[in-house]
Length: 293
Ligand code: BEZ
Ligand code: FE
Image (cartoon, rainbow, N blue to C red; front, side, top):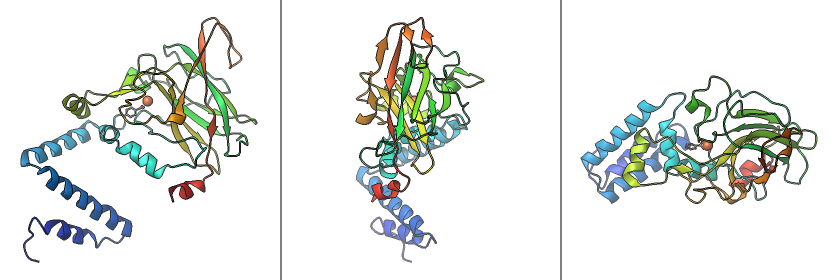
């Protein structure tokens, strides 16, 4: 092989990656090389900028552990997480769309009965999220598993308040009519973590670091595509500038305020409360591939 030149280095590098056994690996690596090299050429990347970028990635990695994923956060603020959702987690029109999972999901939440209270002492305005889970023909899906999690009124998740037990997270099952009901607090907006390298990027570029008020949920049922989504509070601050681009029009839902009295969970509240109805439509498992085509 003759020495590479700046005109030939891209095809030389791609040729080496073209020998991988997996065709998908060949595609992923040769395209990555193409776009990385094009980027470097287009911006005329300097040595200092390249070293700074490597140092930034090293520090993102060092800051990450099983509770904090700075690399994921970087992907989120670059819009890459949401783009991947839109490419790979497409659903047919009429089904509830997916959005980013975010870094605060904790597996193994306790399962509560219909209307169960997942506040576990968290501060915030009493609120109820309720609705039905159906298929795309409106048929109720009984026994669907809803795993919900959210931040408290101060915008803090379980790992951020240092709670030792479940805090604002629980699982619920739909009844024979596909219905579910969750007792919780009204969500409020919060900032993504900005005490690490991604925070430096936020400071250097002035990009949005706020997320509009939302509740996360996954919904699973045999034979259906697993849904990973949120509801966003209608009228919430930052709804048009979500730091991680997760808002989808179908997921914006207005909460309704109520005076003290009977709640959707069948309890009597002596304080005002709010309710939100989030009806979920699951796509059949086979639709995942069809929607992507
Ligand atoms: C979240 O919604 O929990 C979240 C998503 C992406 C980055 C930070 C937080
Ligand atoms: Fe969140």
